[in-house]
Image (cartoon, rainbow, N blue to C red):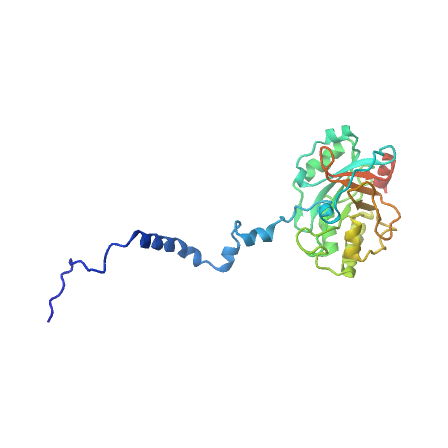
Length: 291
């Protein structure tokens, strides 16, 4: 019977592990908990490429004119016609706290403020922007950025009215505006056919009128309207048009409208970038507010 090896005898294959092996073992130990996680846990990592692609741009970040330059380009500025057109601005959360007194002194007399988006976002700066414009003497209103792929038009109209988009006959409050334009989060027409898009817009407008007694303003660009509604002309008789075109003239308007009520003509104006012209003197702005 062969002799037993003493317990303390060294084994030739039990050499001290190499530095390379130690490093590999340590790395494996660190990775083990991560590899054990379900696939969804890895996808939720905010620094992962998949997560960034899914959340950029962030929901709620859209605003009036968000796709104008990308899709329609940008030309020169119109001539100064404030004697016949009244200067205005539009703002959202990306402007933060706005210098309203500076805008008023520069000749801006009306403003629109983003209140909501979809049924999931409220502008955190809404109070400062909406009340601040009013407090310096401006006629002001609220707008809603539409996301027709997330909920119905009626649901979004309700959300808008419930969160700042209402109206009162005080001579200083403009009717709410529906911002319907390119989808910054996906397909330009939000995955809807032209007829379905018209139906969604009508659903929003009908509910807004039922809630407030006013016909909402429609903000859009002719190229988007043509692409996504088939250049539908059925809203022109009731809903004021706010056209987006960054050039020397408003250009061709969507079907159904013979003129624009408002025109967003630049995203790089003074104090805040988004400047607009109301098609008339200040008394016409007040008339729209009064309904």
